[in-house]
Image 1 (spheres, rainbow, N blue to C red):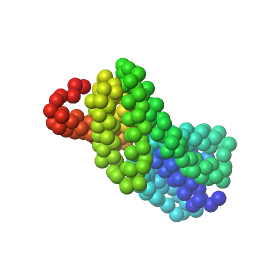
Image 2 (cartoon, helix red, strand yellow):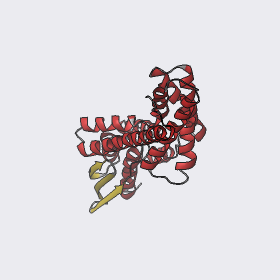
Image 3 (cartoon, rainbow, N blue to C red):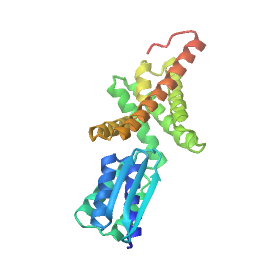
Length: 259
């Protein structure tokens, strides 16, 4: 493998780690390790939450530099774990550039769970969190159905029509809140607040928030601020969706929905 191909491989490793949701220090670590092990000279990496700047001496005299923009995307922990394992193998000298390139292609092909698995997981997660917050069995049953509806809406409406992240969070949280309000009005379950909490929990930005805290602890303040902003914006969109439906429901029914 030529030095230029090695340079591209190191950049691809960092891009895959960062786009899968890995922290800044993990991205820098795998790129530094690969560059050192594969003989890439004077390699310097600067990474932010949505971009990588990489420079190195290629073919002895040519200073090569690439800037790669990486937009914030859904976190895929299976890819992050696979990249961590690959990083350890590179550090131990158990993976040469060609093997690393083949393994990277395999990791990039990981697609995660299918639509059915995501819908089932959303429903079970919603029901479980409803139970944890004190919901009765009927509350959990409504939350289970709301969780199914939530990811069905996200996968088969928001994604095909390319609805932006802000609007998809607002619309999906509003939809499940309306579903819970209707179920509450029909007497299907007695605790509206617990149903809504369980139903919207799959949207909660727990992992981005944890990553932002980890970045702050590693002194990556810019990356931490970007992830924190993303988490706060997501939480705000959920609150807007829930609040709009509750307000409209009260106005239309002439009563007060007690949360």
